[in-house]
Structures are given as C-alpha cells and as structure tokens.
Image (cartoon, rainbow, N blue to C red; front, side):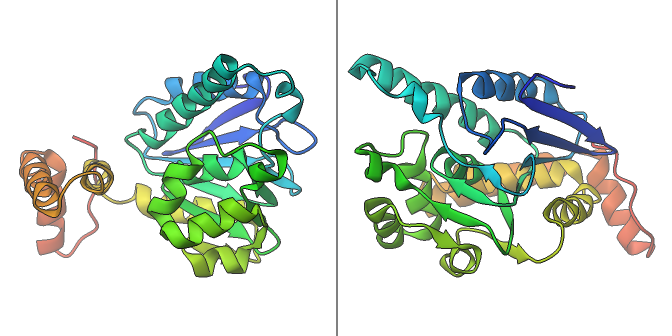
Amino acid sequence: MNMGKVRYEKKDNIGIITIDSPPVNSLDRDVFNDLEEVVLQIGDCVRVVIIEGAGTKAFVAGADIKEFPGLTSEAGEALCLRGQAVFNRIANLTQPVIAAIDGFTLGGGLELALACDIRIASNHSQFGLPEVKLGIIPGYGGTQRLPRLIGQGMAKRLIFSGEFISAETAYNYGLIEEVTEDNVLSKAIELANIIASRGPIAVQKAKEAINMGAEVSLNEGQQLEAKLFGDICLTDDKEEGVVAFLKKREPSFTGN
C-alpha cells in the first residue's frame, strides 16, 4: 500500500510502515494524513507493527517548520491536537509497535517514537526535543510521554535545553531499548518475529494491562491484570499453549 509519503507492507505476521518524505522525513500535513490512513487500515491481519523512516539520514526529523509562521492560537492548538490524535492511534493499536530508528529523531519524530512500544536505534542516531530553540514547546505528546518513560528530571533537562543526545546516551536514559551496529530494520524484524510467535491474544492483553495500568493505582492495575488473565483463560490459544508445553512441543497459536 502506497499512500504517497507513507508506505505499508505486510510480511507474514508483521506490518511495516515506512515514512518517506525527503529529505529528512518531516511530518507535514500530508504525512499525518497518510500515516493515519495506513494505521486505520491495519486491522488485526498482523501481530506486530514496525515503523521506520526511509533512508539512513533520519527516522523523522520533526515537524515541517514551514507550516508554523503566522499560526494563530487556535490554529496552533488544532495542529497539536491533530498530531496527538494520529500518534494516539499508533499508541492504541492492539499490536505491539516497534520503532526502527536510523538517524535523526527530533521533535515530532521523537514524539512518534515515544508513541511506539519498543524503540531500536542505530548507533549513529541522535535524539532531541529542540522546540524551545524555536520559542515553542513539544506539541505532539512529548511533554507527557517522555517524563512517563524516563522520569521528570531527565525529561525536563532534555526539553528545557533542547539538546541532542546520542543513541548510547538515549539507551542509558531508558529512552530506547536497544542500540545496534547492524541494520536496524533487520533487528526490528528479528524481534517482531519473536513476538509474533507468541500467543497473539496474550501479547495484546499484556500491552493493554501495562498501558492501562500505568494510568491507575497499583490496586486497580492488579485488578485489571486479573480480569484480563481470566478473559484469556477462555481462549483456544491458552489451551494450545498449555497443552503444547506439557507435551513438550512448539505451540501453534491461531489468535482465537
């Protein structure tokens, strides 16, 4: 599927979204529209989703700043709400979403990566939220997702300074989960294949428990976990997984 500036390809149980908006995969209105259209069409035909940027210069180097001059208060708020809505659709996909990061991941690009579940980056990648250098703030969820991921102190340092950090530093901060010298997409596909081989309902419910549990008290989160565990007990996949383990064979999960 080719939506213009966003491509979508299905490889077995993996869906791969590629943002291709030269020269640095900027997030203009067309990219947001194309990205949303692709996400809406994913459905349940894949078990894992990967998002990458075309080329090795940038994953996504931020918003298209040419759209910013002359923005009114109302237009600025609407612009942010639009970006947040698209990234929320990605975050709310039932499947795990892996960001395969190769190159600059700045501003809206980092906010896109933050909307994903797992982030794998090449060792030459750089990360930052440099909006304050332009006299603005992150508007696509960065002020909310980054502190939740790496803590308020470090998030404030990155946002207040607008400084760029290396992949190694991002890994040490807990911003990304893996740094690789190998092909990033290949590493992402390798992990996606592992995840796709597990019980798909279990993986989806685990994501739901983690994401929803982070927004409630520990007690409420544990109640949710127990409820989801009970729901899974009614699935064919649970029976298949348990029987396969007892019979010492590999399970064959169907998603039912």
